[in-house]
Length: 623
Image 1 (spheres, rainbow, N blue to C red):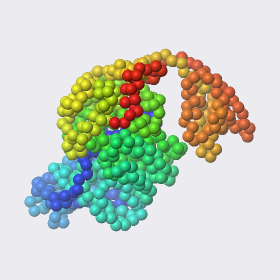
Image 2 (cartoon, rainbow, N blue to C red):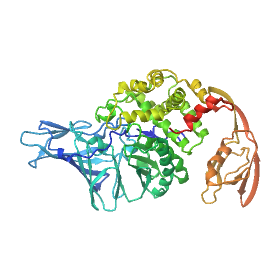
Image 3 (cartoon, rainbow, N blue to C red):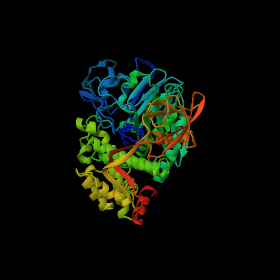
Image 4 (tube, rainbow, N blue to C red):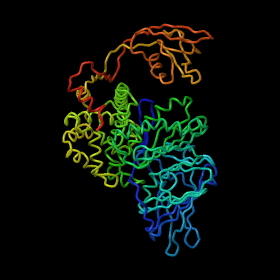
């Protein structure tokens, strides 16, 4: 599903192509379509594609070649047919057949009794620097940068012949010998200048992007899965080795969270754009990722501070990686047999995106990558976002079915907020009703075992199916996912010893307006902006060496900056700074201010044994 980063602590629309099915061995006896893509003769960010149809192509007066209107999981209409130009249809006698766009995404080829389509040829423009509308979310888009980088999300490159979407495909890619293919596609053959891949269907092709660039790859094993990290960084600011170091703790936490890796391989494909490339950056709808069954594609701009990447990548990748559970191993028929031209949307975004977003943050917590306070802050932020975007309760299933409407497109990020909080509440109630024997993860895994990648459930039957395992879970979902009722926040949070207030007058503290930047050369915190009336008496250009006697170190940057910019108490603090070659000790006491704070979540100091047990079952134990 699509996931955009709206802030470092809130994963909003981070994007995903929903996994369509487990990969199967292609049956080329069925006469495949043969796609040939030329990356060696790129002109004006355009590449040449030719398609040889399968022998089973119907002998009709008109055959239709379909380009996707929508990529599964992004829940936005993109109309990839608008990137196709210079179309030429060649008959089996060598003559040209009449060809035209029947609609933006449908190419009609006229056949006659004696002249059948032998080959379809066309050029494709890439989407990264396209200034048309709608703007393509970069992780599902295309980039054809001559001799440097090619990001091939195949819905933007290849289509399928109407009625033959499930036929096998042979994919031939001619490329410069120094470019390497990062992908989870199954390789049939490989030479220095040609890669040949095979897929069992167009669904599988759309689910397996390829990024070509000079090799920068790290491979490691996590449990039973081989993990590949491939990076393209326009100016070399980021490399695969450092990204792999960020991902290892995450994949380890996910492995422990799930108990067993449900895939045997997985690729993290990451593109870091040059922030000065205005033709690309102007179209950024939000950095983030697109999820697939055996890989995920990430689009970021190269950061000024590379150290800040770790938190960003871990939060984004946690969500994307956990889609290997939902919807790869648990999904409805609407996803399993996706209609790329006129899709029917599933009612269960609360599961695919909301529950996955909850699991992502829960796995980070249980893996020790965030603290309990961090987790509670994330939940509070999601409550605030949900209330801000839609103050009135709404039905998540109705929202999902109609997600392509203009109104719901504007509201789309809300599913990562309300859906995640709703998943958290359901997890609490499941653990309470079973005395810790069944969690939401356990319920999801049981459903995935019963259904699995190639056995979809019927959309309208899911709540009834869940009810056979947990009647109380079905009751909750019908009341709070399928109907427009406000979530029972205070009632359920109290069960784990959390106190919730929709609004509360609180005292906040501030040292004034200050901005800091970690200095990697000195490990100090540089003061980059300060008002003269700040209570710490800091000045622009000061280098902070210690805070309350604690030396500044890279691992303490975040905590100490929080102390300086968002103090929790009115206590005086002392900073040691270097200014003009002299060391100074500066004391300051923050100013107190009364203000109203919304969606306040606090952990009670005194909790009952029942509350403590339930909190432990939900947030600490892994089952």
